[in-house]
Image: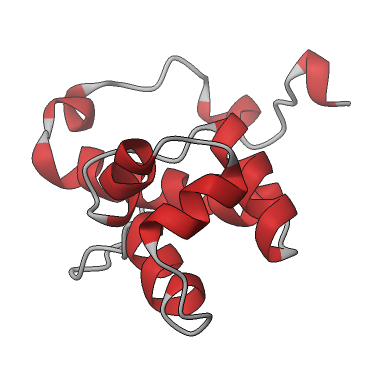
Length: 110
């Protein structure tokens, strides 16, 4: 697990600072272009709501990015918070024998 001490930026903060502000877009104007409610976009840019796969597709279309950019930002944010807010996961023991864990490949990922 990555030992970053500073939390990653919420994707809504990135959306606000790197896209809306430089383009001088209001939340209302961006929400209209994204075909979502102003309230929904406001929750995202104020870091009170996550980027869903549907929202990632909308943002990628609107800002000429990849949907993976947005889902990866959200995943990084979520994993960092999960790893720092609860330590119960550290008590889980591996079920894989040491000799096979590195060589194990998920059947659906071949």
